Length: 153
Ligand SMILES: Nc1c(NC[C@H](O)[C@H](O)[C@H](O)CO)[nH]c(=O)[nH]c1=O
Ligand SMILES: CC(=O)[C@@H](O)COP(=O)(O)O
Image 1 (cartoon, helix red, strand yellow):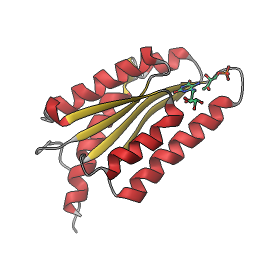
Image 2 (spheres, protein in one colour; image 1 turned 180 degrees about the vertical axis):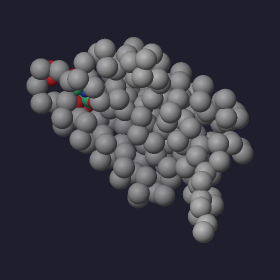
Image 3 (cartoon, protein in one colour; image 1 turned 180 degrees about the horizontal axis):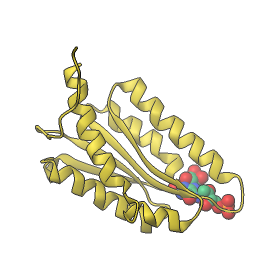
């Protein structure tokens, strides 16, 4: 039986990160976690590039441009969508998740979904480096693993 698993080693990897500025208090923590996760797995800081977008809704377009640029082995998408008083939350979440998934499938480049979608600020804080960990760090490891996995299969 043959089993494929991506190794958690950088091997000269180049990573693009798209970060949404909306709820920047949260997203900055996700970004720090992602950079920490990448560098702890030997991705060189000079091989990490960050693009800031206004909000999560704008992530897929920039993720697409990064993925198609042939500059990056993986793209990590970071944002924080926190429910407000209207249905706007649902539209933003749906479009960013569908858009990010589409970019990965369209380009064959691992595009990692690191957008926290929460009911309230407390849930977002918990996922940005407190009791529920740091989703940015988790996404970094997913990116490294996926790049190496796709090289194997
Ligand atoms: N409410 C949140 C937004 N809303 C802004 C949209 O993402 C978008 O920038 C705007 O509709 C213009 O196209 N964005 C977040 O990232 N998080 C939110 O909680
Ligand atoms: C996720 C959102 O778009 C949300 O924060 C916007 O808040 P509201 O629904 O109160 O306009």
